Length: 265
Image 1 (cartoon, rainbow, N blue to C red):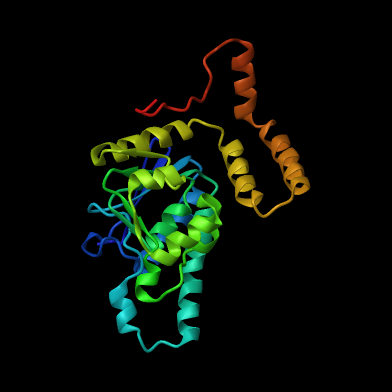
Image 2 (image 1 turned 90 degrees about the vertical axis):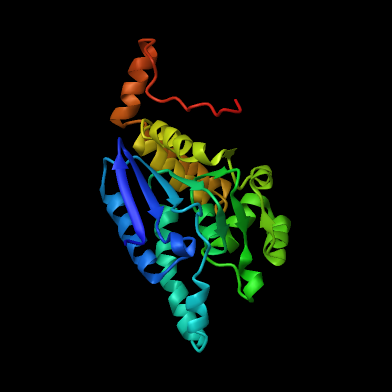
């Protein structure tokens, strides 16, 4: 059975972490297949948005602790090299030039929490649980969590979440800005598809440029971001998509893109 399943429909690719017997804990095979899936999506211009979810009622339980136990005699150098291998996947997901929606059901622990934070939008079911569980096994947060979590919740709260290794429920995750929307488990994937299909109707050029600029924003100066903004706007404004939007606006026709309201709205 593949550790990653991928399907495509109407401009949306759905990636499923598929080790339900291990609550989708990350294995080497999963990383290899995840890399390939991201590479294939990056080359497929028909894919305009991505959904990332997990099989079997869990998102991702993090690293494979059983494998960690069996590798107890690894040297620090070997462990460092193994994590650097995982960084290829981290960087590929973060830099993917399509919007990525995480649909989190059940556990998003450790590296699984980190993977969710690398996505552009996080939706959660009412039974989702988030945990920086690294402290429970004497480890340091990884999968870019030290970079992403402080940017989402602030430095002091990130320290508390990581130091305590406590679980965070969906309501608190939404309050902290980790999660955009919370819904019943059966509504999770349909809502993710609705948002992904809406994003698939937006300008791929503008979305890619906006995502790239936002990823750079917190490590950049105002002057750098203004230069990036001007360059990106120059490219986006000359796209066929933008020209058609301008034409429709002038003709008072229906626009090409509309964000779907949430049930709460």
